[in-house]
Image: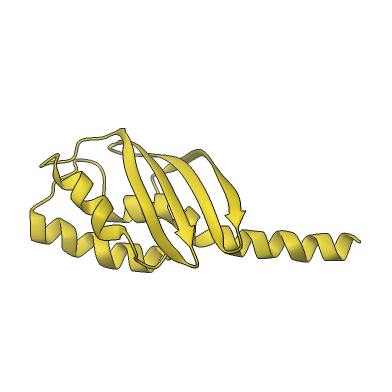
Length: 125
């Protein structure tokens, strides 16, 4: 994902170890937007959108469903997305499976960032 540009995102903690995350990233083939819930380190309610080509188009919804319940770690997302591409003959010009994993990495980072924030608050007190 060296050629990607993060445009922004947000995360909201809604319960202990439950985060709603939205992220947008520019990649060579367009813009990827993700909305996902990270529950206890697992992905749920995954929605991918943006300005990119995804062939065959109906497979995008299938990819979202395939990611449900997966670990919210970049390596785990890549391990699920790459075989999905091969199995379903998915083509995404200018967008690599790693790009989708990168946008989902915010879900993995949310608990890590929250823990870092708590550590900083304790130090500042």
